[in-house]
Amino acid sequence: ESKQKFISQIMTSKSPVRSAEDVDETALSYAEIKALASGNPKIMEKMQLDADVAKLKLQKASHLSQRYALEDALIKKYPRDIAEIEERIKGLEADIKTAEEGTHPDEHGFSPMELMGVTYTEKAEAGKTILDICSRINNQEPRPLGEYRGFKTDIGFDGVSREFYITLRGALFHKVMLGKDANGIITRLDNAIEKFAERKTNNEAQLAEVHRQIETAKAEIAKPFPDEAILEEKSRRLDELNSELNMDRKENEIVDGAEEITEDGQEKKPAPRDDRDDR
Image (tube, rainbow, N blue to C red; front, side, top):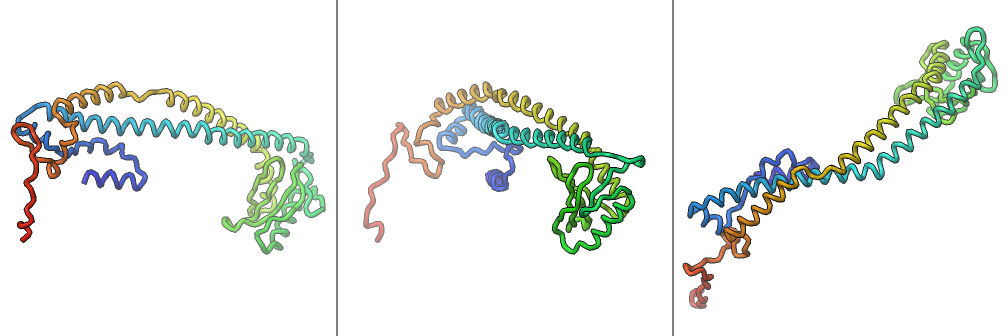
């Protein structure tokens, strides 16, 4: 039953560490049974050491597995994450600059918007035109719309959210869901642009966190298995007991497979086979 628990955990990719306390099942060899019958106290020490060593080896394997995972992350995951975040930061910096250079607000704070080759200077009129364009879209494919605050724009329909959207194309692509209010459309576009600086700050914090994780991973990798000395000591003592109890000899197999030993310590030969027995 205990073996089946371990097998089930391994087959389902679950860590068997939590069941380390179950490592207490020991098949008794012929020498162990003799030691038990003779009341030898060392057999109990040996069986306890068997369980302790097995548990410690399992914990060490888990420790090594975690270290290998961290080493793999240092080689692959973290460099990839850093490259992606740095690319986003660089793109946001470029788009912030594009927005600053391309924004020319009127007395109402609205920058001219180009839609299908026509320039609109009124916010409400631009919003209504966008809604009219949406009403004529009959598929989900994005299409060029125009330009706003220095960004090329595309318009399309999101089949999942069932909403129209505008993509601001700069160094990065920024997707903005529109809604159905004409003035709200322009407001949403402006809000998305104004959040570039906040997104840049968030990505810089994320980059700093990745670097912190790298330093933590390096420190964890450098740590040895904390119970290495205990494992070595128990393993050494277990080897001594096995030697004293003659449990490291090949003839000490499971009882069912053991050879019969005579009183003088010699292996008893099986009796010659008589073919007449078959008759």
